[in-house]
Length: 269
Image 1 (spheres, rainbow, N blue to C red):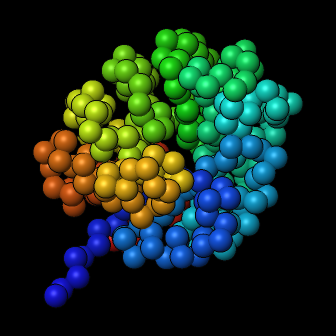
Image 2: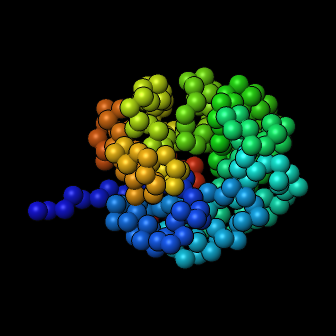
């Protein structure tokens, strides 16, 4: 039996530094490569833990990282300045700012701290030209307000990661020049609204991701996620938009390398 050929893909958002992967990180990266992944971005949740991320990126030539503070931890790193983020992003493997944003579902940090952290990260994205990875959950109106306000101070590249919000935020983001990234949530049975949004957005603004170890796509839902499973999300996105898997992979790759301009694009991707 002939093996199914792999198609080059990118996982634009995973967390390879999380304890879930510590015992078999090499095997997980190997499985991602076998599935066709040519680049992975492991996303920062704490600036204080950047050294650990950098060690991972230095171990794998196809893995890059970001620098930033997750909204859950915003109150713990309010002393991090725009200048700090700019300086740390000078490392050749740091290719994005964040993830930062607003999470009103868990409210693990005071909302004022989350907003302050988000604005700091926006400043760093504006200054460096690196994409801001935005986390937004149950905070659509405040997110739109902050983004629109900050855009008046100077534009910045950004993406709404792991999109699970309403159409209003998606369309506002597109209007501001942002990209939208879809995770395994897109594949869930009850995600019709998310698929409807994904169907309608401009093709040149779409990305795919895993957010591993969270949110494994069907048929792995409920299990630990890993970068190789981004293939499943890309397939559902292709079906949703009525295009071939190969076309969807090419489109999301083009979009990724356009937005993440610091990431070296391999031949054939």
